[in-house]
Image 1 (cartoon, rainbow, N blue to C red):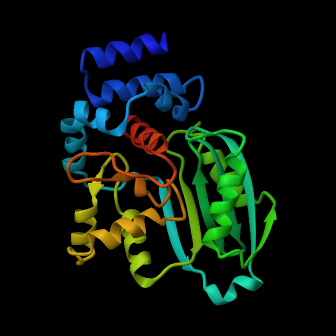
Image 2: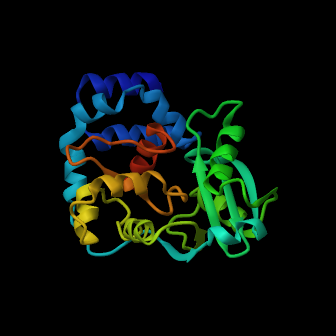
Length: 254
């Protein structure tokens, strides 16, 4: 039934929200990431059919942020890494697929997903975590209270649920400026790299902005998935284009 619905949508050249409705319907019995994969359309094909609707989302006016998420930033110092304990745990039951979350005593320092969802998922995400912190910290596999809260939130079983998160991450002044700007993008609204540059008064720094967005250590809650190319292309995503499309799709329908 699902495949038949997708073929019908693509054959009739229907609009983005109709395709995303199929994603939502499929997600009721499983991960929206799995539904995203089953669409079996590349970024370029998807945007070719749906670019006008993506651009409407970019230009959509919004008077308030409806994220239901409060993010507090706390800077981690690289010099303190040898004395830092990073606790991490894996999870499989979010709507965006399997992932890894990690935290220090001061806050969340990593949240990532893996669209491949295969036997190597754990090693891929763990390697990403340790590389970001230069393998200098002490890493312990242990689930904490904040891990459980975030994993529970990412199941989206309760509508309009609020959550407060402190992130404790490494970064330069410029990176923090960009990442903080990302948290100001309202849910169900997309923006572009150039608009981020304008907002932080650095309109010529779009390349550096793109690099910084690609280094975002906290998926979803620092919403780099809400940034796309000016031409409407869904763009790159550290955790995979299927995950990015699933996040955009989920938010546009919820």
